[in-house]
Length: 479
Ligand code: 4AD
Ligand code: MG
Image (cartoon, rainbow, N blue to C red; front, side, top):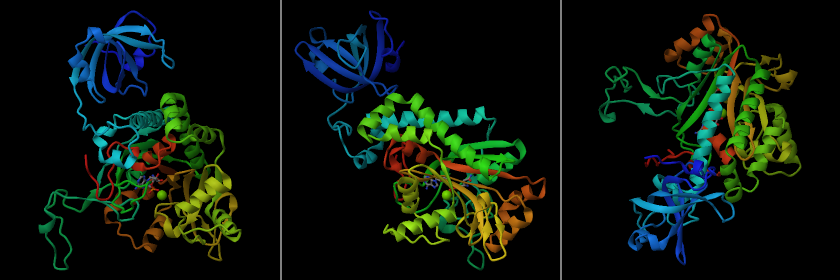
């Protein structure tokens, strides 16, 4: 079949020629002797209008053309007298591929997102989800293009792993054994000897550690793959299965890392503005009237670079001025999303790259700042902190909070081992990681971007469950 995509039909001005289009009926309305069918095939948010001379088409067939039905239309491309569309199709023949009953879950317009999540197998056919999915694809293309053009190699890290990169312990186990008859030793510890991998394995929470092996050989790599976290956080920002992009670069310092984070994310947002106009205009109209303006402002603005200690000072000052937060924010506390959002949305009114976090709540692999004699440390641009800090550099975004988590890595064998000891970590399964610091160690840095958080920002959607086709969250693995 020489079917033409609707996106191409709508741009074609060779009126008079015959075209074949296929798609799903959005609306079907009658007006005297003609019927109008709005057909969409997912190639664009726009529908093509099919004009049917009812005298020429079987009445019974026309009755079956209801919202959601799938059609193949052959017709003449003509200039449209209607506003908002250049061309339409004068119908010659209609073939119905699939009728669609009145119980079609996407029948009615304006259903809640909660309702649509329960019908995620069909919600992809709506305007909103079509737009989000096309933008999602475009962001993936932007990411690959950016890294390819900047000399990064796409590096594939394992999804099944025996190590816990983030050390948070929220991993999904992988086993072929019946969990109820796993063998245990005398102390009650599970023996994995006869399990598939002969050791305890899980789904990865991050490809970073293997990414570091790639970067310290190839110079600059990035990963882009699924990531799994069994954290029981039922929030609009967390998924149990999400996609992460993790670039890792040799010979990169803290300032350059922040440059890369900023340049990369601006490139992605610019790509959306340049390549997803129709879908963004739709979302701007239907979901969030300030969306496009917000995207443009991120591309045009310089991000703030802020040591954690200064951030705490700003928050403390705000509290003095009467600002109320639910959670405490004293030096040493991990920032809650309300604190991040205050800094980004109210105080600076632009994205913030926060750096030099307290050692206590950041990961073991981060580069340690120079300690001072009185227990403090010296970090970015000589700023002094009251306690030990690490060169973690997170990007905080309006509406989203943390969109990127990154850091310079500790390249010193002694310092890294000191930290591992301090945390009493079991390094049995990470011997290979330590080897990078023994054999030709080098300064290096990297970050992880949560793909769905980027999509949230770019689409203006409110819930992370609505920017991935089939979300995985606690108590939900349907579809
Ligand atoms: O800050 P995180 O935990 O950092 C890492 O995993 C590092 N190993 C990355 C690196 O340096 N290579 O996660 C990175 C990002 C977060 O900033 C957030 O955008 C996203 O991943 N993220 C999640 N997105 C959706 N659902 C979750 N449960 C997420 N957890 C983290
Ligand atoms: Mg983080």
